Amino acid sequence: MKNNHVDSKLLLGLVIGAAVGAAIGYLAATDKKEQLLDELNNVVGKVKEGFNAAVNKYKGKVSNPIEETDSPE
Image 1 (cartoon, rainbow, N blue to C red):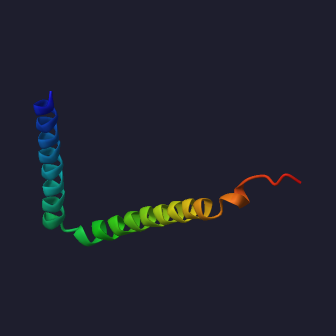
Image 2 (cartoon, one colour; image 1 turned 135 degrees about the vertical axis):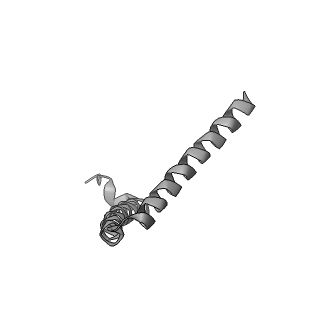
């Protein structure tokens, strides 16, 4: 059973590596690589903003747990 788990991880790694390699090859060979890279940077920027917002929201909840609860007044 453990051997199957290792084999599946190896296969997954090879598939991901092949996909990344194909994407890099496509970007290197295309005439529109600057446009594609700009679009990719925009998407990555939006993902980073969302991630940072989620982290900040989580930090706010963790650092101020008393503010989140109702007061017994």
